[in-house]
Amino acid sequence: MSGGLDGSVTPLFEIESPDRLVLSTPMVIALGNAFRLFEKAAQDLNNFDVCIAERRKENGEGEDGVDTIGIAFSAKLLPGQKGLGNASRLGRSILYIASRTTGEILREQGSR
Image (cartoon, rainbow, N blue to C red; front, side, top):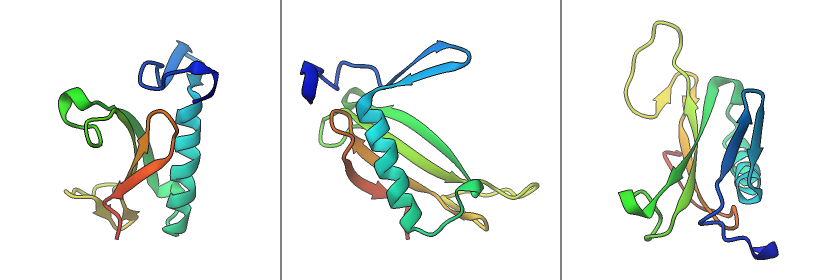
């Protein structure tokens, strides 16, 4: 990564105040890449919540022992609907795993 930044040490984001969120460069790249892939699934983004999480090698979440970023597009349930799994009538949930240092999408889970 340019500028000598080590993405494994730099925080993905910082909350500076209740109305200000600062994203790291790899996080912005990962979000853009994940959104472009999500668009190809031809699902309505309005029917999804987007959740971003660090995936750490310490807790077994990382990709091949490397810290990664998880970007999940989680399908919302219709009011009053209950369900398990990754799909609802509003769509199918997708999780993208991205490199913490480059933002490159490494793989996806939960897609058709």
